[in-house]
Length: 236
Image (tube, rainbow, N blue to C red; front, side, top):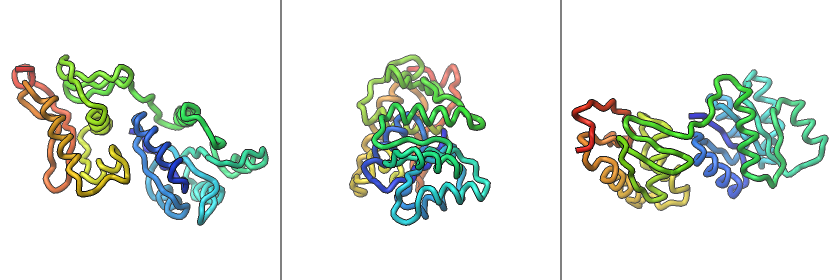
């Protein structure tokens, strides 16, 4: 998965961009302060940084300047309400790779992101069809099949399964699933994750000898990439 860090103090914009990019298959980390965002960008490897210029503690320009001074070459897409030409030129001079003025259309944001990633090392287009073991998910048609059998899911079940399929084998904690699939404001005491995992298993595994979604006791859940055998993993 391509990892993107968003540094944006406007919670409405932050959640809009985060959820939209997650739906496109990107792994998203966020920060609402410049100092934390600078720390994350300096310590972890990201494929792209989306950076607001007007932050409450340190400006986006200063973040960009410090990252480039540290020889961190992560592509930077600046977001700002300032549309003056001199502001854009300054951002590009200090090391930004592109500049997008608020308000913006999400389709344009995606186009800018894809263009930046194409220019960076190792970029691969997001696949239309995800496949894990004998399970396939088509992002365009929204159809899901296991060993050729169509599986009907609710929209939230579909979102949960796609989240797992974007990173097969990775263990996701219950809190991380709540955050990424249901949003930050979900009641942490709810059993909604367990209910949806149980429903997914029932729909996906019925008639098969193996279950794809595994419980990792004490840690969370993962989607396992099982290599099916002719005898053991065909519909019964």
